[in-house]
Length: 125
Image 1 (cartoon, helix red, strand yellow):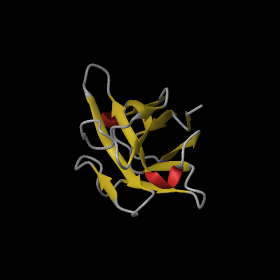
Image 2 (tube, one colour):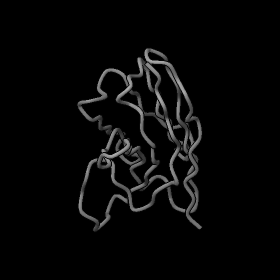
Image 3 (cartoon, helix red, strand yellow):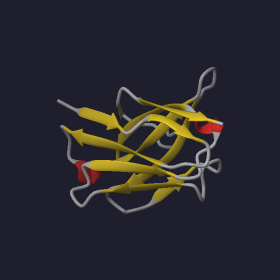
Image 4 (cartoon, helix red, strand yellow):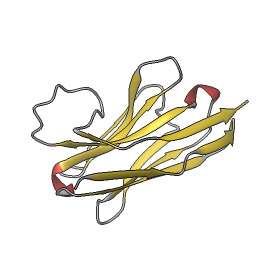
């Protein structure tokens, strides 16, 4: 059974930092891109950042470059999102995603074949 379980969300003050984690299981992690998509209230989902377990490449949305850092553990079964200098516009539900390297699904940045249930990040100004 495929599972993606996020943690680390919560309330944070603008300018602060937090780290999201997502533990994945149920598939061969070496063949996947792991990442994060967020959805702010009233807005469409946005691919934030992701990293490829098979070639090490990474992607960052322009809106988060320089502030967000995506990484994985040595086992490549946990993906992290370090969020620095948080801004009120970072308020959103953050979903962990996993996309197979040969997926037939249309490509959208960091969209996954599998999705977690999401973790809410709320930034106070």
